[in-house]
Length: 602
Image 1 (cartoon, helix red, strand yellow):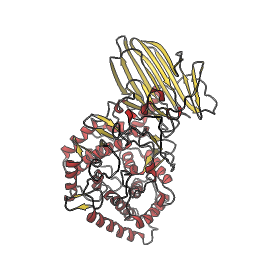
Image 2 (tube, one colour):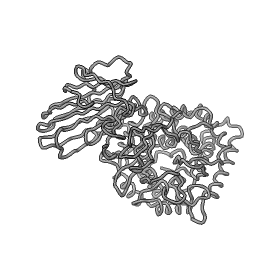
Image 3 (cartoon, helix red, strand yellow):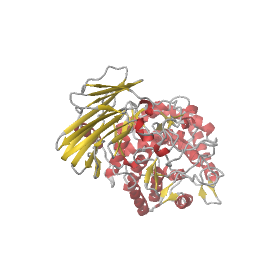
Image 4 (tube, helix red, strand yellow):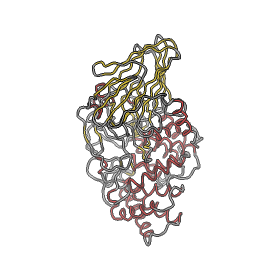
């Protein structure tokens, strides 16, 4: 059985990533990219679906782990009756193909160790051909090949490669695992593995660029490192998480593939990087966005593959039972075909922020934005699926309309503030449409009987996305309507003080799916932002620090949290959660580093 979600750490090379459990088992690895098929998939099944464990052979009394400094080099120390041993895991950055290095170091005494390696390509469905060679083995199946090198002798045992060895104090035993296409020539055994010190230095140098000096700096830097680890370096795209199908409810069906890049996160990503000194990452992401969304505005998607791929066909993998029996296991994401108005606001908001920061001189980005705005003028009144990708009937979602307003607002401000012309009479139309949308939202998104804004027009249900209205500049947080909405969300959508996206159990059953889900961490950070803007600073700070405590011992956060069971839920680690942590920290620290695309002052 897989470990609890919070028991995993992540190592990565900015092309893909692996999840390493506290028990020394790598239970998830996709190669060569985040969205490639997994060769270790026991996270979503059983040991028969692939894993790689290196750990003491006998009982373990205690486990301590940490990242080495500000890096993605993971260090796990096992304490046994006979002594202690340290396992160091890392993925060298800049290699042609993914490499995982594992180093066992004797710390004290003499510890008997055991390695178990089960390779199963294509998400656990393909048992490879394995040949033992000098210093290791090669496993091949279809397009994939894995090569293992180690000085420890290994043998086959029930379709598992095992090795047993003893580590003395100060002794080091290395393991190197490399993926390559099976048709390529095999790589030579490494004469000397890339040292963890070299990889640690690469990450530390990157972290040292962070300009954030406010409170909670360690949490902010760890979140930035996590975002960098989720970045696909060749394009600058950032995947939402390293995993697929980790459940929003254990045993439930709300299991989705998050190994793709969401436009929903666009301006939040740009702000997080720019506010903390990472201009080159902001540039890379901005140009990924321009390439991915290029073409017919009517065909802009809510998400894309790491290189901007558009066809993300959703499939179910019936041979995997799912994490703790949470099935189905899905790859691909059918929500990529949904229609969501908010993405147009995200594009325009990101454009404005890019121009404000000097990332774009108003060339192709501005031309593309004009096409988006021309299209949006004609469709903003249509219903859509909304920010949460609800798989039910389209509705007039309040947040979607607000983001259409954002698109028009940022376009007008771009003309006014940056003297970007060449729009003919459009700017007057944009002002007019902006005013029309705002009036529409204030009339139809406001429920006078409830005294709050609601999820969609004509509905009486609440939605955490309403917390974004002040953050995008639609209304001040101190507006009595917003204060009333915040208070209603605190009363009706909070569990133990943390925020649900919406109530999945009410009679309206808006998403049409059975079961429940945990509190949504990004939404809880939005509540922090609203409390701070209202002036409830002490409450905002207290909630922020409670949210930080929900991260695991490595500072990593998933998408959701279950307060009753005190465990993380959803895909892991989650970029949306870490992005929201960064922006809330900046707001609370009152850093005067500019605005988020014209959003409420940070």
